[in-house]
Length: 446
Ligand SMILES: [Zn+2]
Image 1 (cartoon, helix red, strand yellow):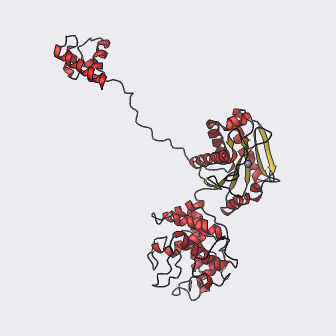
Image 2 (cartoon, protein in one colour; image 1 turned 135 degrees about the horizontal axis):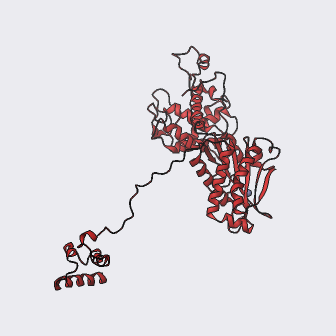
């Protein structure tokens, strides 16, 4: 890992979670292929509940557990991922579940970095919570000498400050792991966040059997698949199921993820037809507007072929485009309550092509690198199966209609001895005729 630490850098313990569960899993599995992804999931969700950097806490656990391979005083089954209560030979605390263990760790960090009460609905599971001087370590770098004592290698450094200058304290090691995570993930490509409008208790607009929240999600999922298949890009969804997420949370998710582009997908209603797109007011002339021009054009390139009218590239004070810190856009994919628009939205082939056009436009707007499309391996070419040329088995010059008729007897199993083929023009003995008739009788009654 080619990451260097600025000795003066201080990184806050409190804050949004930047990385997704999948990204954390990917990071650890490069070192520990049998890593249990439920642990990563707990850090993301519980970190977010407390406003603690769950992804950095995850790196703290990578440090404490040696990439979740353990091997120190603490055993994996203790669900203690940060050596809580463990000191030289003492195994430390045991928690009933992964979630409880991660909650205790996040609470312990919360105790150090915040003076606020526990978030609503939370109860203390960290038995050492009250031992912490609240607010005494706001940064990861402050944990040396507090969470970890002394928090540096005494055999290598004369003082904590010496270790700090060398970038080799407890907190700096955690940040170093985190920088490695950033490096790995950003190498995967820029990040686009797809935001399917509405969801859960908020259905959005409805008409002609279309429910906006469902249609927007199904298109967003197709756009995601298209993007991942065609470009070097990362795609995060604000939602990939039917759940309600407040508008401001959608924007703050994208901000925490440090997204490069934010695309919100909606459908229109109430008095109109056609396609339109929005950026935040005043940003038509900026980067958002530049990307809007490209994405809007790519979508209209397709939609105009199915007769959709262009309502234009617009500006509005929508929360998701206002609160996102990166270039953003909100697209209104036709009117659910207009008969001709709704017919298109109810056509699966149109939806597939619209999703492909949106992906194309995002690819162009973000200048994404195309991934070479590799054709799936073709099966070996085999000639179409026909009845084997049987003519060779019959006397030369036998007409095909005779061959076909006799071949049918063999195919049905009515005649089995192939030597009859040589005697095609000779009469069958009575016993052979009887055997054929008997087989035919059995065939019809089986
Ligand atoms: Zn909407």
